[in-house]
Length: 273
Image (cartoon, rainbow, N blue to C red; front, side, top):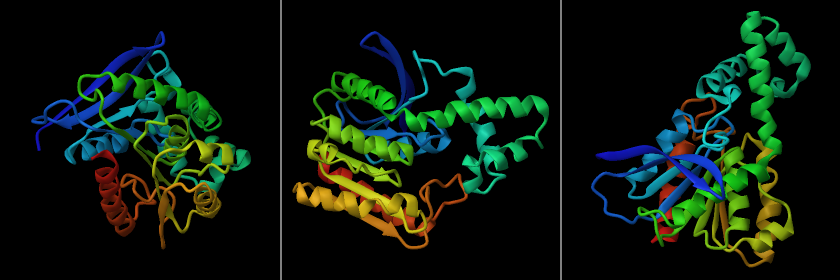
């Protein structure tokens, strides 16, 4: 399929932002929108690939670059720097990522110049896990922009997020009453009844059995949604780890990914038609 892809810079409420957009070359405007919300790693090759996959399914697919402050990334969070921290963290077992002693021991084995670069990028990157409301504002700016863009004007918008982005997808559903649907891949589910009460659209979730810190929160969210008479369906895949859809990382699980992709496309077909 012939695709049109581009980075779009835009301004919303006096602040500059940017997003990656993909759509079928031969499609006519406007198109319903799939809003792809990044993992912690940003709008990397995996997220851009997913964005293009959704475009091939017949949507305008967009991925906001949540680290582009004022339309440009800070030096510590460039694509190159994040790839460096990925490669470093891949040498550690995931529990050691947040163990300062184990992490410092591994850092001391790196060349001095690289060691300091990795320290700064790690600190700046993982700090965003505590800044989800700030990132949500940047996603909301993208939805406002899309509401009046020639390729999406007056069209339905649904969101999908991965890991950190999965949590943000649900937060968006709780803050945007016009959102048509929201998908969460292995992101934390909110436990606030106030957030659940604010959700107006169907929610779909996909989780890995071997990701208990995330998956253990799902039943409580399911109960809250049921009590509030809201729509929530989910899958927990046996033998799948966190990040099972990401085919660039070690946790990729082909069977879980195949089924989750089919279910996701079907969900978007229902809510965006």
